Amino acid sequence: SSAEDKCIIDISTPVFVLRPGVLAAGERATIRLTAAGSDGVVSTGFAQLAVQINRGPTLGGACDVSPSSGLELLEDFSVSCFGWTDEDLPITYAYGVRVDSPGGKDIFTPFKIVDTAVLRLPRGQQILSVRA
Image (cartoon, helix red, strand yellow):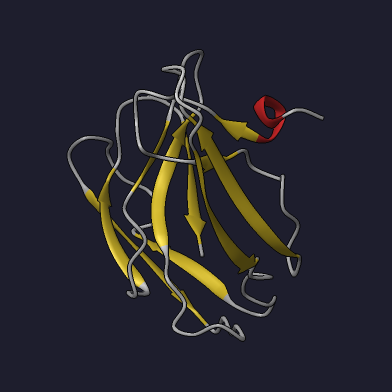
């Protein structure tokens, strides 16, 4: 498969993004980026990084939402997660919703080392989600 199948390439930005699922949990990989000049000058350079993909938290934890029902846009919902363990500590969490409608987007907080977040839900059908 090609590089386009494995990563998102946008030469206008200095960000390198692998597509989800390219690397499996527990897998070790070396990522090497090579650049070559396009101005007729023979010059190349590269950078590489060895990584190991975290397996993620083990089963056995849970998350609670309080209150269990309420009004979108008006009420705050508290999401608390507890009982999760991982070989790579500390565990970081991102809390958010998937708007369950055509054109809906995932809206998540940044990953933080907090096991509780307060969310105000957007309008429409949502699926509450926690990423660790």
